[in-house]
Amino acid sequence: MTQMFEVMPDSHVVTISRFLVDEQRLHPEATGAFTDLLQDIAVAAKVIGREVNKAGLADILGSSGDENVHGEQVQKLDVFADHVIRKALDHTGLVACMASEESEGLISIPEKFPAGDYVVIFDPLDGSSNIDVNVSIGTIFSIHRKRSKDDRGTLDDCLQPGSRQVAAGYVLYGSSTMLVYTSGAGVHGFTLDPAIGEFLLSHPQMRFPEQPQKVYSVNEAYFNRWDPQQQQLVTHLKNDAGFSSRYIGSFVADIHRTLLQGGLFMYPADNKSPQGKLRLLYEAAPMAMIVEQAGGRATDGCRTVLEIEPQTLHQRTPLYMGSRQFVDLADSFF
Ligand code: AHG
Ligand code: MN
Ligand code: MN
Image (cartoon, rainbow, N blue to C red; front, side, top):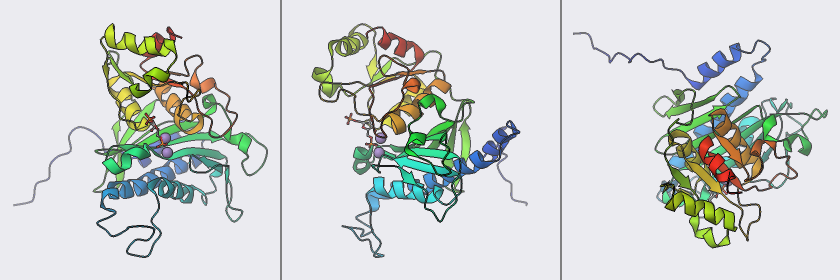
């Protein structure tokens, strides 16, 4: 009796590598550098995901304090993730320079390695406060093309408005590990199959639902610190517009839910943080590119996030993003 195998349903198995190569074919001028860069980022995501998925075991595995059982340095997961991304990209000859939430200044490519055209700016681990309670966390990345004449990138190459991004994406380390990115031709989601170590296309052409769920997402503990318009907006959503509330406290997880179900995510300014908390270059701008590519909107309450001209690497911005009709509603309060 020959062994029978389950016939794959009428869907294709498309790895992120296959998808990127197919996408590249649409651009005859492409050199393949972008494809290689995204694949290197996907490898970094798998390495970070592996550590995230065993973070809870850290103590059981005896990695207490600074050294683990192998005498290796145990790092905070943020620092570990930062290290993994740098090491995945710095030697490839694809990157001119990098910037990270975990690094005060510009991250230059070591002289011993060739430099390339792309600038990669990233939040290596987003939602750090949720690591110890096993709640979803993420990684966010923003990709620009170098615009300076230097053969190695400069700070100015990092201070480009979000509208000039060539790509943006995030990794969500949740019940499954997902990589979601856009290069300006729609938003595509890939789910990691840990058994084969491949990101498989699971969410092609992600779009906000036409009938979005009426959900707002904000940390209401700061209500008394908001300006009156912000207070009136949330009160309206709750009392008159019949909204429900969901707030995970991990930006990547909150936005991923908002993208799939619809809704309005807010991180407003308040009287203690006049620019809000989220950083423009590696949180707001990449997510704004994704949100707009999926048919949504992203503003700082006044301007489109993608138009904001950055002045410094870690500058913050108030943030309203999600379903177009809900961001429009928020705008009407300001
Ligand atoms: P990070 O862990 O990279 O510093 O980001 C944390 C951010 C973001 O993930 C989330 O939306 C926000 O912090 C939550 O802030 P509050 O705890 O003030 O609500
Ligand atoms: Mn973050
Ligand atoms: Mn972070």
